[in-house]
Image 1 (cartoon, rainbow, N blue to C red):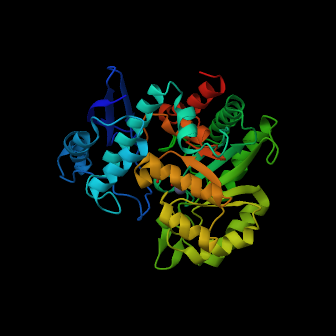
Image 2: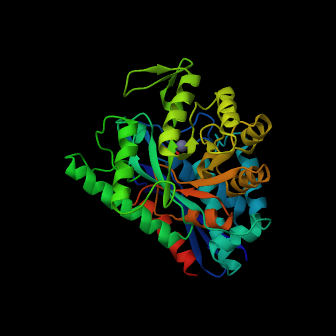
Image 3: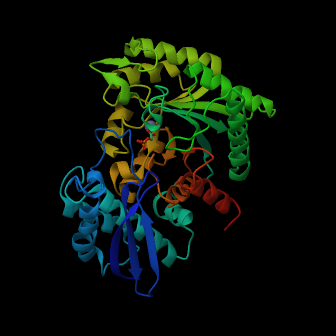
Length: 413
Ligand code: PGA
Ligand code: ZN
């Protein structure tokens, strides 16, 4: 079925910042739309998110240029094409952009079209989005439910630097979405009660986790653990811990400058600290433990891990197949974080996932700290058979949209 029109809009994300939503219309009159998220602790090597930059509208954060690029450049290119030619459509848009980083038309513009066209193609194939993604890109593996990584305490840039570590996550052991969501939600609720009893804030950060003024990383992990134990859940049985340090954000002149303690650590000292945390709290996954170009430190940590825990590259790889290829050659990590908007098209994202899987790495599909109600990544995680999905805490509807979508898929809806 042919695409008959494409139209884009400026909408707002969960932080009230502009983002792009694109509508694709098909010959039968049906309309399919998708919107793109936006990061705060972004990697330097990410594809370009085009923003207007003039200081008046939305403090320079407007995306009218990206919207115009969809309406006047990408739409004429793609309208008239068969909707199931996804790889060709993406390639056409990349060629038109003509840069390595989508700096011309914007990754937000290109991805919004890529995602909306993918949804339209799933509709014409009469398949749910996850099955379409699976059959088109990931048929070498079976679809499977990912474990959740649920960010119950927010720190770093997402919560005014109350902690240096950006995300303290719990990962329920079960992969059954409704059960995993229940365990995580119960722990989240109990954690809120515990914080209130300690007379601490239960306001939430950008990803829906609490951001209390606890004194240290250890106290955070201890408080979560105690809350879970109150419900009869134990660490290593019903759930594990995972961390995202987003450490590029506190890397300065070759050292890791911890804002909370005032300590400056070398890469090796930080690595030793992680090891101490791990031995006490059984942490199964360390995301961006080192800065985005600190390849040597990643290699050391991964070698040290002996595959007993995950070293995850987020800002390190920015979902870019070229950087992932380098990571595989260097054995820099044993896992990759996948964010569609870091690379800016569905087909390149699929290539990144496939490459990581072939290398035997674990795959974690992720949201951004600025999100929308679009639940595309839930279908992607299941369809690709990703090992984990990271999509925030058990609050804020833009986070829950993804968890709720997994429960729908589980129930065959
Ligand atoms: P971001 O944070 O969306 O602000 O980049 C998420 C992450 O670092 O994983
Ligand atoms: Zn991250």
